[in-house]
Length: 129
Image 1 (cartoon, rainbow, N blue to C red):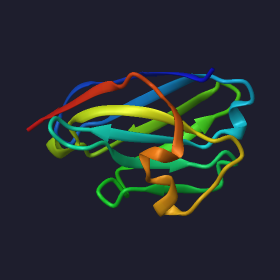
Image 2 (image 1 turned 45 degrees about the horizontal axis):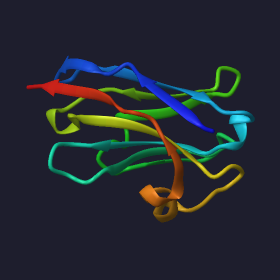
Image 3 (image 1 turned 90 degrees about the horizontal axis):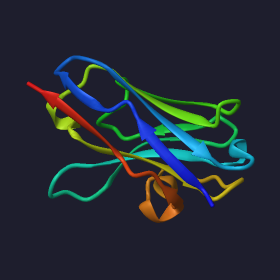
Image 4 (image 1 turned 90 degrees about the vertical axis):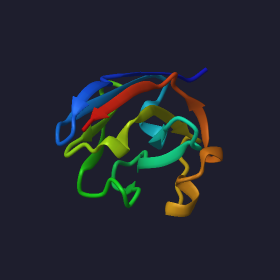
């Protein structure tokens, strides 16, 4: 059973920064590709960022490139999302997700909600103007 717990959300002014964390209760965490998605009120859940199990590959949605950075610490079973230059358009609930162990894919594949087997409960990020 894979359990994911996000933390680090909150209220921040436009231009500010937040770092989200996702603690995973997974055996062999280093085998799992991880991703962050977000969902704003009235909108579908959308892909934000992905990091491969090997850490060598990362993907980002165009809207966050250059502002957000995904990383992982396999010794702590944790994946992070550093968010800088936040904009009110970034306001959403942010979800951590785990993919199939040892899997990989191109951007199109890893940006699909269906590619992930486990999800956290989400953490709210609100950016005020």
